[in-house]
Amino acid sequence: MAKRVLVVEDNDLNRKLFCDVLTASGFAVEPCADGELALKAARAFDPDLVIMDIQLPNISGMELIGQLKRDVTLARIPVLAVTAYAGKGDEDRIRDVGAEGYLSKPVSIGPFMRVVKGLLDSNPAQLVVTG
Ligand code: MN
Image 1 (cartoon, rainbow, N blue to C red):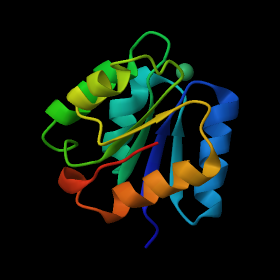
Image 2: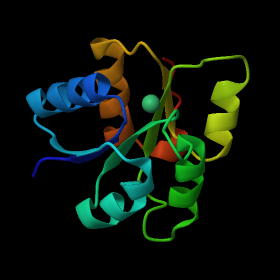
Image 3: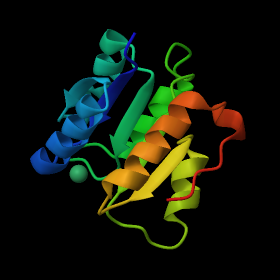
Image 4: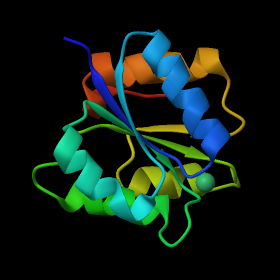
């Protein structure tokens, strides 16, 4: 049974890249271009992992991660945050809202797939991910 990954990313090229790479690795992928639909998509798709862009129009990926982690039915799903702005303290803030993984853009395929597989295979509570 293929693991399921929800990709929340408003940028068309990045979303397609993430989805293509994940599909090529055998994952079942659901793209979501609109952050405001992300929680609805998570409930409908029941993913094993959520890839979450932080810079989204209308709503922050940080806010969405917080909402996911406060939802009793969604909180168990690991979240990999991807962000274009990797300032000092950003990773801490993103992890503080509940993201289990973190990558700064531009995202390279090798590290991306390693983190994805690590989040799917490991106990998130014990996982330490370095970009
Ligand atoms: Mn974005």
